Structures are given as C-alpha cells and as structure tokens.
Length: 240
Image 1 (cartoon, rainbow, N blue to C red):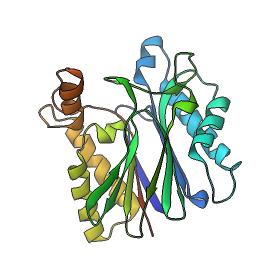
Image 2: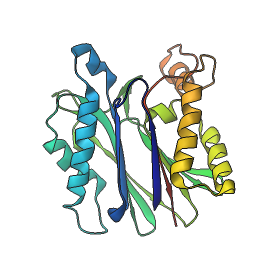
Image 3: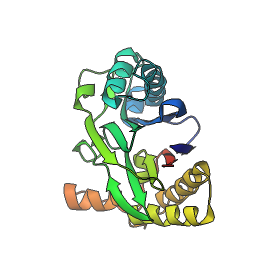
C-alpha cells in the first residue's frame, strides 16, 4: 500500500480523532474519541490517541507480514489507561487481501476503476451511539470487533475514515473525488486532503443531503437535516 492521510479537527487541534500509518507492516488505523465524555470534563481524544499509539506498539509484537488487526486492538485496549472511549478500526494488507477489525462507525471503502466495490458495515447500539472501546465497564470489549477480509487488486484505491467522513459524504461523492484524483495522478496524501476538504464543506451545509441525515430518518425516525460538523480523518491507500 502506498499511503497518505489528512486530518481536519472540528474545532481546535488536536481534536478527538487519531490515526496511524505503519508502512513497514502495511497497516493503518483510525480512532474517533466519543464526544459525550466532554460532559464529564474528559477529553476522549486523549484515549483515542493513546489507543492508536498502543496499536502501533502492538503491531511490533505481531508476526512480520501477518498482522492480526483484532489482536492488535485487544493488546492496545489492555494497555490504554486514559479515561474515555473511542471507536476504532485497524486495516492491514496481507498478500492480496485487506484484513480489518472494526469497533463502531469508522470504516473503509474500496474503489476499483472509479467504482465502489466494498464498503465496511458499521456497529451501532442506536442512533449516534456506536460500539466503542474504553475505560468504562459499559464500553464494548475488543472481542466485539467485527473482522473483515476483502480481496484487492493493483490499482484499487482504499479510503479509510472516521464518521466525520462517512456521515457527510455518500459513496458516489467520494468516488467522484477518487476518480478525479486518479486522472490527475495525485499522491495518496493529496487525495486524502481533497476528500477531507469536501467532507468538511458538506458538514457545514445545513441543507445538504447526507448519509447521516438519511440514516437518522430512515432507520431511527430521527429528524436531522444537512451535514454533521465533526472531526474528519481520511487515509488513502493505493494498492500497487
């Protein structure tokens, strides 16, 4: 994987998102600290960042070229001592397959020839209440992580992100930016930045048709219009 990333915090840096790129083991991860902790005076971004740091450390304990994302999350969760909680996703490339472990509503998409060929599912207890790893006994255990395996080909584009991306951009919107980036021959980091900036613009549009507004209405009977301002993390990987 040839990888690049871009992050736009909703307010002041560093925000509540975190991510890592472990190029030597072809592994990436994202985490989105749960904002509700702010009501208790806790910055969940600290938990998210610590979990990602511990994930990189856990990868070093994995067999070379055979990272197990779920085991990475288990070890990282065990060693993370900060107060708070976060969604978490770890994705690794082994041979011709992406392997992932996901807790919550971050996710990834695979585009081939400008078209979406895979989108990871989300884990929600209810609307705006994703599965999450954390310090509280009511948080979900790492064993709840959904494991995924997806075949990929040279030329595929993988887009990994937190819900700040996927709540605001439909798959076809992301596909348009990916296709344009491929035609222009941009690097992964440039494409990640372009996607993140579109997502940020939509998040600030009170009349935009967004995935989060559709989901709120169709699945949960909630009335929500427009975009959802949020931290936005985008990682783009070219399969080469």
